[in-house]
Length: 180
Image 1 (tube, one colour):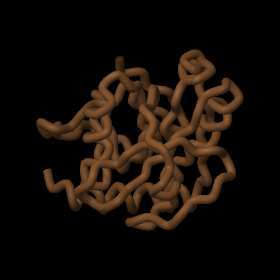
Image 2 (tube, rainbow, N blue to C red):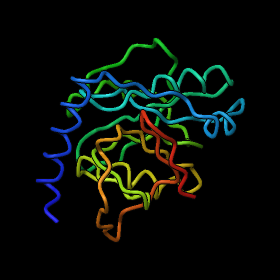
Image 3 (tube, rainbow, N blue to C red):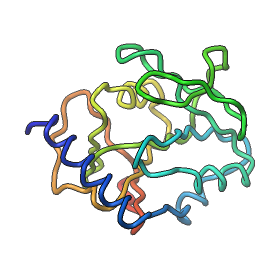
C-alpha cells in the first residue's frame, strides 16, 4: 500500500467533507463514563479539517479532569504531553501546530485523544507519518487510545506495521466504535 498516496487521498476527502458538511463531534456516553476528577486527558488543537476534540475536552473539564496538549519539537523527537489550562496562551510549533511552550510541565495521560487521517474497524490508524502518536502510545501503555475522525476517513483495512499501536476506540460524527 502506498501510504503517501493514501494520506493525500484521505486528506482531500476529509477537507471536502468538512467544507461541505461542517460536521462536529459529540461526547458519547462511553467516553463520559470513563471521566473522573484528576484524570489527565491528552487532547490536541486541530489543524485544518481534523476532527475538533473540543466537545470531549469540555466534558472532561466539567468532570474535573486535567487537560494536556502535545508539545512537538521536530519530526524525530517524541512528543510529550504537557498540562494546559483552557484559554492559556499557545505558541507556534512545527508543522503549523499550536502548542504550549517548551517550559510547560510534562504529564502522563490516562486518555489520549488522537487525530488521524484514516482508520479501519480493527483499530488501525493512519497518521501523518512521523510516528509521534505510536511512540506516545508505547510510552504510555496504560492510556486509553481514542481516535477522532470523520466517517469519510474510514477505509476497509489498513496494513499494520510492527511499530503501529491500535486504538481502543474511535469517534466520528456518526458513531462511537468500541474496539477493546
